[in-house]
Image 1 (cartoon, one colour):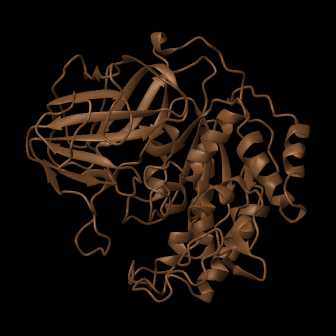
Image 2 (image 1 turned 180 degrees about the horizontal axis):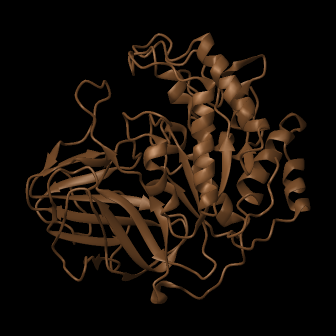
Length: 446
């Protein structure tokens, strides 16, 4: 992998020593060492980290986001995918848990009404350390205020950031955010594939140590971010992608999406860098449906994150696969040049904001959804487009670095297919228990 020289405006960094990376590579079987080099270079050296500082910046107004979920609009009934959450909430509390990437001593919460057509009324909101299930740790509950108000209203299209609360959250710790909705509230702003259980109960139960839910959902509703006080050298990496990044197929409540495991690796290596997951299952670079297109959401989901200086882009397979299938039967198929042009736009916008952008190759997708109502996602013409796009990602030099996920998971005898030991049969998405092996790129074989 080639890392381009540091551009003006990027923070001063120090690379991990090459012998440390080579020692890690040496523990991997020879056939996978080149792939491991890409992983080490892409995920560790490309996001090289400065020494941490014990001084916190929250008192001086410096904050860093440590958990994110890209807001999505609710799709119309003509789309096949069920929503799997109530279409409105009324006189109910929802408690949502989230594991953070790095820790802090002060905390803020972001709620979003981005796609709402009416004001979002929050009757009360609390945050606490999560214990298990719907339970919170005794003594950790804190009242959230927004502009010093315990009850507040978020206008349509807006978001709200809470006032800071004193709450020490450890790295890779979990927090629970609870809020009460006293009025009939359409669930218009959501993150569909949350992979985390949210608990819904009647009445105002925001302060309860444990709630017995009337219903549950695995989507995120209105909760879009969590921030902590930042160290002076705080940094973040944004993972910007589709279902592979969002975690489709990963175990609910297990936090084993590949960005989760990247956060664990960075912590284990003593590099406390925030990892922000801005993946959306079904996301496309050029077209809306399960969320707005990447070009439209890049500013909000990538460029606005404080202290983020690196973005990993892995998106485009749905642009290739959706046309001529039930997913988008009337859509024209984008050309290789269409997808490359969209990448060039994202690269330019990242560089204009002083950010590195790492390109990730698109994984194989032969036999994707074969025998299901979604058959048609793959054909040979679409495969030719994927191969051509990957060649550009690898060889154009346009990205600041390349992570070759395609090389990691493809089946050597049939390179348009994935290793069945590492992915689910219908599409190339890493599956538990193989997910952790796929993420770490260790002892991987077909």
